[in-house]
Length: 345
Image (cartoon, rainbow, N blue to C red; front, side, top):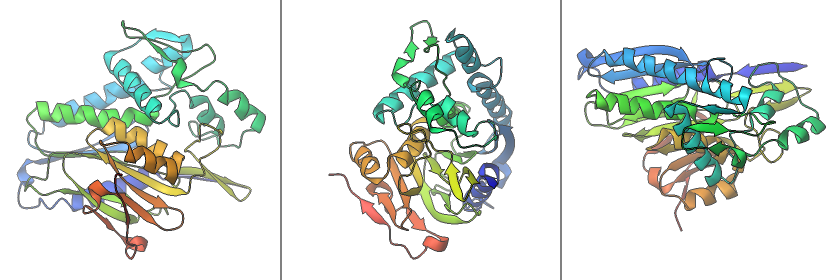
């Protein structure tokens, strides 16, 4: 018996409503508040700016343009061309994202790997034709997973091995958020909030100078919240096993793949939220830290100074890093949980 659950659109749409509702700007800048909804990168995206409404059409064009370059399935995309020919001269945006993505892969010791796409596809998470691959199949596919074999040339040419495939999905929405923030700032916008399918990113503060309050979805995946974090000019990106999964023969298989085994990561985490200035980094690390589990994830954070995080563990504990210890509040079923604070050594 197979049961399938994909909560990306529902739960993230609810998350953004909660975020906007906490903004506290009603009666202050309503005349300058403008919003738009875009469907791209297989998810619903909500954009809110305070200022010139015209920037929203430019933002939508930017999102569609990046989607057209990063898509794995669109035959005119850079990534489709790369996977088909194994070597391609790509756009500046694709080259830049691939370069940054590989840096994050190296930083995580390969826990994030931009060549894991064939394994994810074998599980059906890209096609929704869900199945449990045979172990021999996974071993064959894992032998082809190695981000270090992606080659970048100065002429924006990217090359991959003949038996490899790549996908930028683990960092694409974070990169898109970063580019939107750049666009808004260039157009004179100083206060904006976007939700790119759960990747929430804020430009500046609220119009009244206060912090944005961003809800973190409950790992139950039922539309409730596990907590709220207050931020200014940062991205808040969550990865969790509840986002996309299927059940077969009484066992649940989620979409976050352990690149060392080919199976869904069994890390002890229910969700990981990463908070930082760079959306691309937060996007890549949220998945990686989830897959690592507590010991390695905490160690990576301890050796870093460019992000904070909220970890929700399977045993009900919540861990928050010292940079957000005063900005996070548990909600719902976690309301009575006292977060354990992680401090740098």
